Length: 123
Image (cartoon, rainbow, N blue to C red):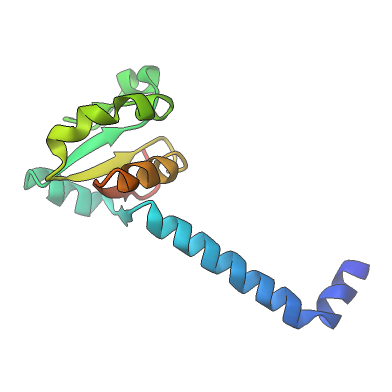
């Protein structure tokens, strides 16, 4: 009960905390790259404007993947970024299992100078 009393008495502090959390989360998502719908991804791939990087592990990739995707497991991304150099002029679209691993990978690739976008929701 004291938790709710604290919230009611300190509503300004609680509101400020919630705003800060929202701003932080929004800025972190923006750093990781724009999220794409499946429709937008299809348009980019059909127009040969993007390359798709599948961040799932090799076993999950072998069980099923999007045609043309390059498998670079997220745990090995740091050591394999150089393989993406030939795609520097294209958009890099990241996909993973549920959309959790693509944000940190997107930040790394954006810091390396790539135009990164992510598939919303993962596979």
